Image: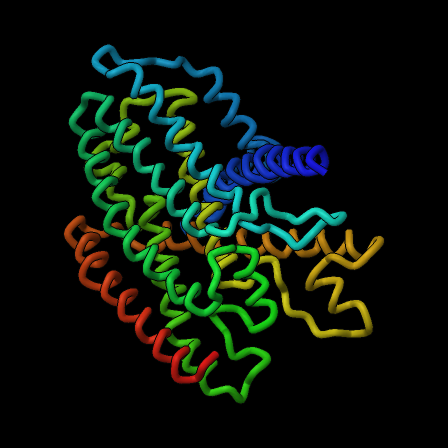
Length: 368
């Protein structure tokens, strides 16, 4: 049993990192360049391979063969450590996210712990150390300003991020992310709890604070990942690139890989908490079909096909959210720093806090 558990866990770790996350990160960069070209009426990558599909491979080769230059004035140990700290937390956080139901009887989650969301916040918050260390260790004014901006921004929006998920766990009564998905399968997605129970007034009222939590959480993820309109730590026009100004070669690439890995992880958490995880509600056509696509635990080929279908469903939802991240980046202008802090402290913090009391009142009155 222990050998089987260790083997399947290692296979899930290797598959998730090397087969899913790293290729998704590489092609998320490609997708962003294509989306920005579409929005700006340009062609985008179109030279390396058909439709430029080999561009990420060319970019990786370029970063690997570029000179790895270390400026003389930097604190070398922390200068080298910072890119790793920016990359590792984003990848480690994905361990507790259920990306499917089961496949050949194996749950599609690397670590199904009973404090999943606390693990997410604990590990993801370490990402700020990479940026702060990069800014401080560079011994240059622009990276230092970028590091200071990033630390204050992440502290400000982590409050909203944490408060926004409390209504979800008031409803579910559990911090295990697989239980959050199971609850949504049985009672409707968090952003649409009235589905399947159309006559229940309490579910319709509950939809308002849950949708509010979804928007607050999603916007806070934008701020946590330093994406436009919250990319003040980089701010090329003001800080010449911010915390990674003094970096080159693969260390420079690791910061961008960390940003896109954080986007993927953030999107996966949004899907898990609010959009039903790997669940896709489909009409039952005949006996067994509904069980196949919802759970994926039926025996034989039905279970395998159902498990693969659920995994595909999860990553299609993640891809849709990634497209939204890119769309927003090339649509909205950057906030001023005072606007960013005001939005976090005077609006989102209060909205998320009041939202908790509203959900608690609805749950107490309608006794869900």
